[in-house]
Image (tube, rainbow, N blue to C red; front, side, top):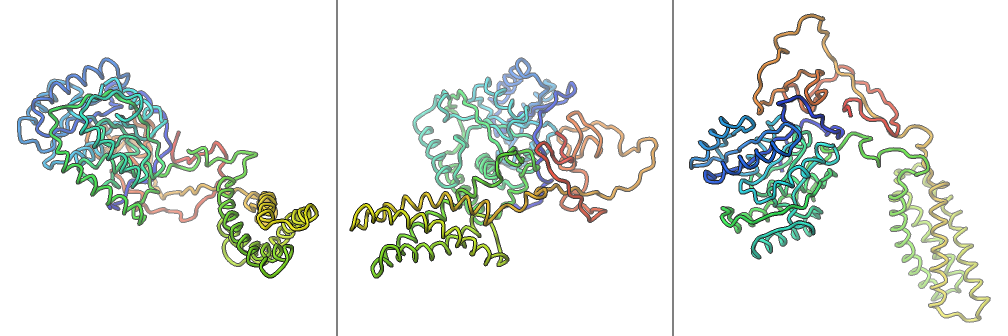
Amino acid sequence: MRTEPSPGNLPAREHLPAGHAGTPVLDVVIPVYNEEKDLQPCVLRLHEHLARTFPYAFRITIADNASTDTTPLVAARLEAEVPEVRSFRLEQKGRGRALRTVWSASDAPVLAYMDVDLSTDLNALLPLVAPLISGHSDLAIGSRLARSSRVVRGAKREFISRTYNLILRGSLQARFSDAQCGFKAIRRDVAQVLLPLVEDTGWFFDTEMLVLAERAGLRIHEVPVDWVDDPDSTVHIVRTATDDLKGVWRVGRALATGSLALDRLARPFGDDPRDREISGVPKGLARQLVGFCVVGALSTLFYLLLYSGFRTFSGSQVANALALLVSAVANTAANRRLTFGVRGRSGAVRHQAQGLVVFGIGLALTSGSLAALNAATDEPAHSTELAVLIVANLAATVLRFLLFRAWVFPDRHDESPSTVVASHTPAVPHVPAGPASPAHATAPRSPYSTTSAAPRGRTSAYGPTSAPYDTAHTPLDHQTWGDATMRLQPVRPNDHDPRNAR
C-alpha cells in the first residue's frame, strides 16, 4: 500500500460559507473514455440542472481518460461554450487515476463525480452534497441498494452488485450498502489526506476509498437514488470483478498488517463529542464494563472447574474457599492489566491485597448462600449447589466491579486535567512592515493549480487558510520548529485546537 506523506491530520468540520460570486463550492467531475456520443448531452443536462437548482457556484470538469475518438474535441468545445465547464486530459486510462488527479488539483471545497450515462436521477445531487456543505459528513454516496431506492436493471447486474457488497461486508467488514454506484462526493480537506492512501487507479478506487474512510472513523452519508441501467455500458464485468477481488485481498491484507496510516485521518481533539468530559459520566466506563464482563465470564468458568475438582476430595465449603481464592488472584491480575490498564509491577502487591479483601466479601456472600442451602436441605444435589453459586457469584461480580473501580483501581487522573493539547510555536522570521511583496500579489490562477491562492495566515473566500491546504509551502511532516518546548493546555468540553478554526 502507498505510504507517501500526506498534508496532515484533518481539521474540524464546519459549515462552508457561500463564498464570492464565481468561486465554485462544488466541482462535479465526469470521467470519460471514448464518449463522443453521450458527453455533450450529459454535460448540458447536468449544467441546466445545477443552474436551476443548486444554490452555490459550481463547476463541471470533464476528465478525459486518454480517449482515442473525438471526445477531446467535444470536451474542448463545451469548455469554450459553457463558462462553468472545464476539461482535463489524461494520457493514461483509469477512472480512479482521473478522479485522483482532478480532485487533488481542484480548489472547490466539495468534490463529486458521476458517470457520463447519468443513470442516477439528478434530483439526488443536492441531497448528496448538502451534508458535506453543512459540515455534517465527510463523504457521501448514492445507494442503489437502500430500501427506498428505485432501480431498473437486469438480473445479472443486480446479482453481481449484491454479491460484491456481501463480499465487502464479509471480508472487510464494510457497513456502507453500495460501493460501486457512480455517484459520490467528498470534502476537499478529507480528499487531500485520504487520496494519498488510496492505491487503486481503476474501478476499485471507490471501494478502497470508502473502506479506508470507514475504518478511520469518517462519517459516510448515504442517499437513496433512482437509477436506470445503461444497456450500452462499456464496462467489462468479468475483468472489473476480477480486479475488484484482487483489490479486496490487497486492502484486507494491508488492514490486517496495520500498514496503513489511518491515524492521519483523525479529527482534532474535541471535534467528537465522545472526547469531551461531561460531569456525571465516568471516563472509560463502557470499555471497563466490557473488559470486566469478559474477564468475569472467564473467571467464573475457571472457578466452576476448580470447585468441581476440589469437591471430589473435600466438602463444599472448603472447595468453594479454595476455588474462590485461586480464581480471585487470577481475576485481580487480569482486571488490573486488561480492564483498568495498569502496567508494570508497581503497586501489584497492594492491588492483590485489596483484591483479597474483595475476595473475602465474595467468599462471605457465596458461603452464606451455601450455608442457607444446607440449612434448607440436608443433602442438596450438586447441580443445585452450582445454580446457587452462580447466582451468588453474579451478585458478587457486580459488587467486585464497583469496589475495583472505586477502591482498588481508582482513576488517579481525575485530580488534574488528563487531556492536553500540544501547541508549538514555529520560528517565523521577522518581516518589517511595508508594501506587499510581489510574491503576495494577486494573480489569475488555474482551478487545477496546486499553489495556494492566499498566502499563509491570510483569508481566502472560504475562511482562514491553514497549513494542510497550503501545498506550496513545506509539508507539515518536515517543518522545523523554532521552539522545541510544548505548552500544555487543559481541554474543556467546548475547547478545540486553535489551529483549526471552527
